[in-house]
Amino acid sequence: MSEQKLAVNEYLKTDSDYLRGDIAEGLTTEVTGAFSEGDQQLIKFHGFYQQDDRDLRNERKAQKLEPLYSFMLRARVPGGVCTPEQWLGVDKIASELTSSNSIRLTTRQTFQYHGIPKRNLKTIIQGLDRQALDSIAACGDVNRNVMCNPNPVESKLHQQAYAWAKKLSDHLLPHTQAYAEIWLDKEKLVSTQDEQEQVEPVYGKTYLPRKFKMAVAVPPDNDVDVYTNDLGFVAVADNGELVGFNLTAGGGMGSTHGDVETFPRLADDFGFIRAEDTLKFAEAVMTVQRDWGNRVNRKRARLKYTIVDHGFDAFKAEVEKRAGVKFEPKREVIIGDRGDRFGWIKGVDNQWHLTLYIESGRVKDTPGKLLQTGLREIAKVHKGDFRMTSNQNIIIASVKEQDKAEIEALARKYGLLGEVLSATRGHSIACVALPTCSLAMAEAERYFPDFITKVEQLQEKHGIAERAIVVRITGCPNGCARPFAAEIGLVGKAPGRYNFYLGASHEGTRLNKLYLENVQEAQILTELDRLFASYSQQANDGESFGDFCVRTQVVSAVIDAAKDFHG
Image (cartoon, rainbow, N blue to C red; front, side, top):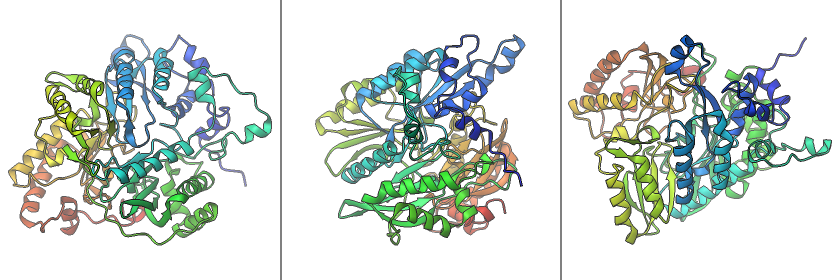
């Protein structure tokens, strides 16, 4: 029997000379603004995607011009923490070297640039390097940016959890020197064959079968949506000291419209691990995925499918074998709210933290809201740090009492503070989608503000305006804004049309389920009007909208995603 043919990306990785490919040559080719088809896959490992402005496609085609190619570059910022000095450097790059002239905070606690011409890529990466930042492994079939709860209250515990997020990120970086050679002009190392075989001790020559996402949660907050990640670490504390983590594995949001073999999934609880064993278990899970993951069908290549196909018990046993340590019973912790704490919060260390709402994470100056200028001016005087949240907001963290008034005055002056924010808007997010994302089937970021306003109006109409409902919109089912874990999820199907999902738990511990397929806004709002009327009259005390939809059988609960999500 002949061997199965691997996915195309597997051959690209094998033949890439550890992610070098022909990227260096493509970078200097001036006849096109694009990279070759194969290198378009490899550049993802270096932190960026090739895109084009889809709003201009037809116009440029009529003019017999190639698409207006540009690049989206995503940085690696473990836990979303950066210094004010780094922020100023990031801002300067956005203003001088991108056509968007803006910064976008992502749903994974980092930032990305849009509208980068090919000629500026190297300059930008070298500029980030001068700020002790990089974009390696921000995309591609590797462990991506490690998220960590930015908890501004339990400062000591956050610091301990953040330290592990940073260690995880650093430990699981690719070892190849391709990034340093191509972008930072480092000399290529001449290695013996034996040394070459050790160049990627964790990843191997073909890296992982698919992308890999990781998060560290600090209960009771679940703002990092820990169960939606391939690998999650839920902090367990004893008298305020971190002692270990409950480990979760097998989450992931992506699916494909119409393909019942694909589905979003929340991670399984595997048990408690002691803090000193964190890296052992992380590496064990990743190497099992490396060796057991599907390299034939990329749509079935995420860790969630590896666990489903091989079984929980077999996967757990193999992880324990490779880690050389057994899981202990899961420790009891409370998983609570996924929102951010807006405004001023005082931490246990008596320092202040100001969380600012950034709609869809877009840091840009607009009339009446000079968000980019405002954050720049704050960075010039702030003595603490900046923390990006997984809800696309930003925290001006560790402000001393005597500096609080100055920071607040700047935030108000530039429109970063003062807006009355509904509980629902504050809990809701959207992906970039059109016009730049090549996968988008419908609007998300540009549609988000108006849609949320209409949801707020319906909540006001039915007297439930004070109740936070998690709403998420994506332009496609890849799920970058984690729509399948939203109480109300809209997933793009075609221009102006969405699949409409209901019934996830407010805390992020249950997925939602398809309620209506391929519908337009009018029908979505009509249904929400009816459902909100019932919710306002029939909800139990403290019952979330997602739980209400399941209890009243608007949709059935998704317990086992492989069986229930499409069933």
